[in-house]
Length: 334
Image 1 (cartoon, helix red, strand yellow):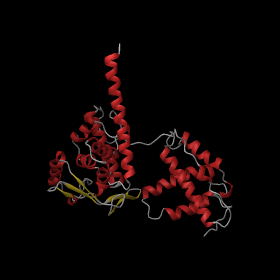
Image 2 (cartoon, rainbow, N blue to C red):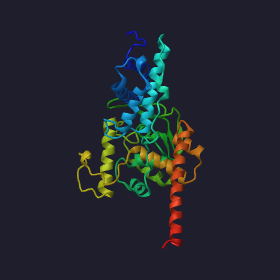
Image 3 (cartoon, one colour):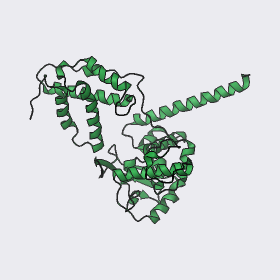
Image 4 (cartoon, rainbow, N blue to C red):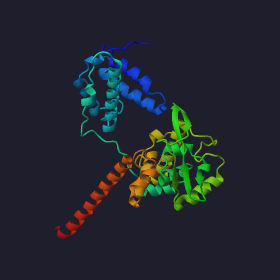
């Protein structure tokens, strides 16, 4: 095992830190950390850790804040914060394990206020109606995500035995996590480690029961052979769904779904998590209090729910002010 000290490079300390911190993490999270380290190493990987100054770290944030070479777009504020946290953690790890004197300049890293934010939008009313009316073998799953707030991994792991049709409840108690490039494994808990029970709206109860009666699988949203989805089969299923959504409601002229990358997205890009965000929006619009919404959404921290509700409240205020502008313009405008 290599001996590290204050003269060792940042990447040497980073790799030792990584070995310790990726233990038990989902495959997807491990890949994210690898990507973050690659960005960091491209700037300071070869520098001795005790020689790194704040300006070296500022270069990472400024350069990546202007352009992420992997996407051709500015890096989001959330991702910049994650990079900052990784750098902080590696410095702290080196300080705890090194007899030499090392400062942690990452404590002073500032994230630009104007860095773009990553937001997940809710579907508008027209899009919600399309999801409800969409004839596709994924319709059952989309109804559960949009009207019961399931995450994609929770849907993939869901069994018919988890649905109580008599009492109109769905018990969300497990999650499919990616453990290899094309493999899901079932984790016997949800993302935040807690189970939750969600009421099923009467609107979709009969639809779900019909799907149950005609299903030959124990799984609610399986592959065609009845087995659990893999990452690639889930991706293909979603691409197929979006293609048909465009073909039926967006008047797409293409008649094949086998080249989805070439499909003109007449309808704006819709991702699975947007259906869950739509559920949160409908909870807010229907007057469900924040504590109840947090439990129904399965958020580990009520602050997550509060953030969503605050954003929705701000949108409502903007809409209300627009109505006021239209009102006074109609009275006093020329």
